[in-house]
Every structure is written in C-alpha cells, then in structure tokens.
Amino acid sequence: MRIAMWSGPRNLSTAMMYSFGARGDCAVVDEPFYAAYLAATGLDHPMRETILAAQSTDPGAVVNTITGPIPNDVPHFYQKHMTHHMVPGVSRDWMRGMVNVFLIRHPARVIASYAAKREDPTLHDIGFAQQSELFDEVNSWQGSPVVIDSTDIRRDPDKMLKRLCKAIGLPYTPKMLSWPRGGHPEDGAWAPHWYGSVWKSTGFAAAEGPLPHVPEHLEDVYDAAMKHYNRLKSVAL
Image 1 (tube, rainbow, N blue to C red):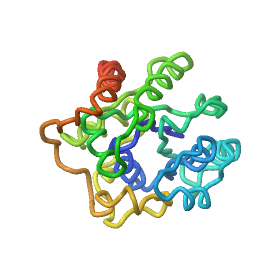
Image 2: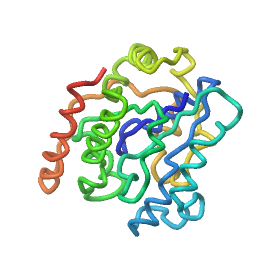
Image 3: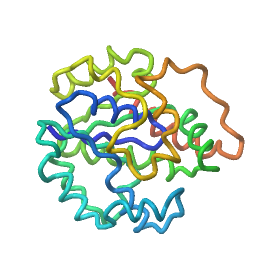
Image 4: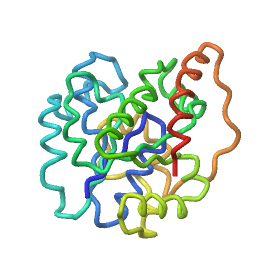
C-alpha cells in the first residue's frame, strides 16, 4: 500500500510520518517535492540552498521514485506531502495509484505555529486552498477520500489511528503510538529549522488547549483558510 498524506505545514504531519515509520512494515518519505517546488517558484524559504542540493528538482524524477520500488523491501510506503507543492505543471496522475488521505488542522493553530518560524504566512504558504482543490480532484477519481483532523489525533491517538487504519484498509498496530527521540533517518534537509519540537518527542503531544489569537493583519488569511477547513472538517473521521 502507498499512502499519500496531504496537508499544509504545521499540521502534525511530521509526527504522523514518525508514527507510520514506527510500524516496522512501512517505509516513509518526507516532502519529496519540496526542492522541485522551490525551484519552480523561486521562493526564498529557510535553508533553500540546502534543500535544493539535497533533493531532485525534477518533478518527473520525484514521481518515478515515489511510484517505483518501495524502499527497504517492506509492503507499505507512507508519503508525507505538502499540498502547496503541487504547483501547475506537476503531474498528478501518479496520485491515482495512491491511497490519498487529507490531514487537516484548525487555521488558527496553523497560522500561529507557522508564524513562529516564518513571519506573515500567506494563504498559499499554509496550503488550505490547495488542499481543498486536491480533495476535489481525488474525489473525482476515487470517491470521497479519508480526512482526519490533527486535533482529534492529539486528543486520542489510539482511537483515531485505529479509525484511520480501518478506513484505509491497513492493519493497526500500537507501535504507531511511539517512536525514538531525536528524529527519523528520512527527515528532510529542512528538519533543523522546523522539527525542533518533534525531535524531542517520543509520541503524540497531549490534547491542544484553547485556540490561539490570530493577529489582526492575518485575519484575511484566517478567514479564507476557515472556508476550506470547515468544508473538509465536515467529512472528517
């Protein structure tokens, strides 16, 4: 089974990659289109040159890798993907062979977390509009794809991971609830900038508290993102 997990940044996506990587029967890959995205857009992200040097900037080569033999000769392949990396010109046909899942998080939490690492995120930066677009595309091919909310996972990881595994036809194992401290061998080159908290973890963080305040100058981004979030939340597990 090849699982493509689609989210924006700061969505519990790295912890989910660690969770699947802890299964023992599942290879993982961390945002394989990141360098291709930076090359195509010219955006100045943290550690840009390091990322461009670490990954292929050719989307076709990336597709060949993620649809080719599964690493480590295991039966399953979990792929952590950012929705905003699917820029115009990048083929999406390969997604038809994936079990596509959409990982969502409340925009207030995403904006607060992203802004702490990179100031003033745009709607494009946080991926909500692209997530909604990809959801519609997958829905047209495969029927309504699975959607899961990171808040629900943190509230009850065992329950929600069982529900997720059942929904995609993958046997559940409690190994998914914990992982070694210090990161994963497949972490992307950008990990030193973004993954500080999850590197210190050995499992999912506790349930989240009240929603954070959204700065006034980001309220337009928040309002636009909420429309997409509420739509996918309505069909979440």
